[in-house]
Image (tube, rainbow, N blue to C red):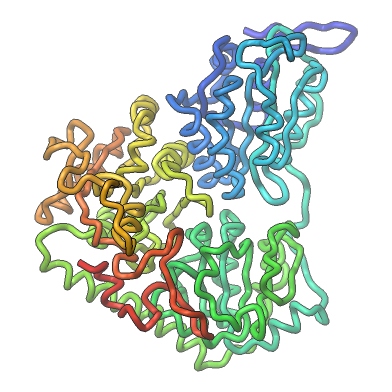
Length: 599
């Protein structure tokens, strides 16, 4: 228990971690993820509260879990760790949180002030390592600075462009008297306007009003910012064809009659023509990263303006010409865009977008009918069974490997009105999705959570599967098992000069269990006849709080880009012209070839 003393009319709390926990309680924190320092004082402090401490086996997984928690809930994720190598283990998680714009506070131990430079155990200049990866970093040396700095950390992580912050609590504070006034007013969220309006003669409004073939692109910055379905109202007022970025999924109802999938790398073939013909792109809450803009026609951002709306100037992509509105996109939408007929769309354009949406779903149903004749389950069929068996508010947490990329192609995977999605950032840290799913489930205990991951990524996470079980986080892990790292193997197989000494997968011997009883929490989905029944049984176990691992043996050819030549990070494309170049639209690869994955 903490000790509160009255010294010179100033209330104090004995021990830095006791003070930290009191501030977190006042801020409404419910969960924290990590691996504490050896003194365990943080756990002693947490033990007096209702805050759940999820004790992880790996610091990187802890940061991934906290990031998944933040992305799903919209609340600030809290992570904690020891000092020295514990902090270096957490760096990849900070990188992912920063790239994902996830609000997160990492609290770490640190070397006592009187031991710095004396060869202290695990001494490290942690601030120098962490600072490039976070919005703000600080070390608390004076006891009186702890509470104000922690309050600032919570605010900085959440407000503006969300992101991770770092606060170091050196060991000399472990038994210090920390000033803490429980009655003091403390604000953890900045006050900002709920609505924003632009002048009628602004460049952005003039651009929108002249648009007849608009495209609306919904980015990750709109996550948790679609109150009252104002984005769908905006799309209707614009008459726009609607796309999202990978991180923007779940922000917009994908059953909307003019939703046409993901932009850029994962653009559905049938939607490519819309990007050729649009006369205005409106991007809300997106940095327009390479994945989202991959294959865009050259006319986008030159003769076709891109109206970008972001809360921070650093979020704008200045490669694309067009008005740049520095504002909260949700506030602008609520204040103006969703209430006014901001564009003058042609009837032909709105009908065309609706036809593309319908054609995508019609083609997908026909493709599933074709796959039904094949003996082995295909990845598209597994995704279809998951969508059919699990409730509509399913949250799919993804990786970004060779074969789990199928889940990025709409409508091979499509979200219902209440569905959710959590994906890796542009950094695509290996193992993120597998670990983040635990944080997502902690944030949304009443919703089904499926981690759709490759076996290579799952292997990096697997030490914390026991953590998920201990916390009774009923995550369903669907592990696409090709025996290793499929993307690297596909690159290796396509090299003109073979490198026969090396393998990234083990043909014929994927690392998976035999056909086990689901009561063990693991089984292999290799029988199409029992696929649905196996998923139904797995879901019942997840409802009870038990995580389940479903291994799906897959061939390397069952991949989204299996019929497209690889070129390192992205599929290779022909020489640029004015046509969009998503995989499958180059003329060399047919739509069928891309869907079939070369099988």
